[in-house]
Amino acid sequence: MLHTGRVCSRVLRDKEEALKAALETATTIASKSPVVVQGTKISLVYSRDHSVPDSLQQVVCTYFAYYYYTRLTAFFQDNWVSWYQKGKTMTGFK
Image (cartoon, rainbow, N blue to C red; front, side, top):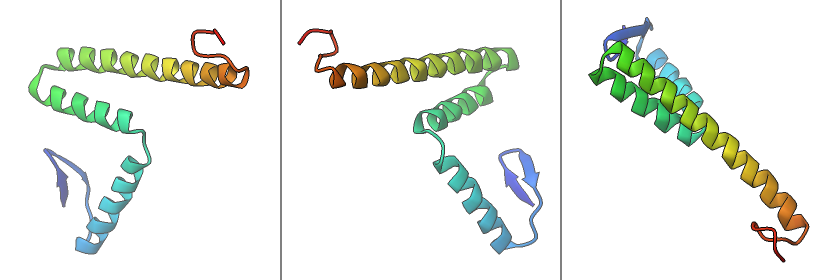
């Protein structure tokens, strides 16, 4: 059995199959945003040491923080491109 922490995620036949599954999982994680991966790790570590209600509250707060961070980042990236193409600076002055 392949155990991750206290939970058995799936049963694999041999070492080679376990290695293949680990590499697939690593590839999936590597394809995600580093900000999301780090936020998930922080939430998991926090959840390990706190009660379920506290952990859920922390996850919700983290989710909204990352959501608004990505929305603001996208907003500034989009506006920076349009301001740059118009020959303006971020403050709108030439």
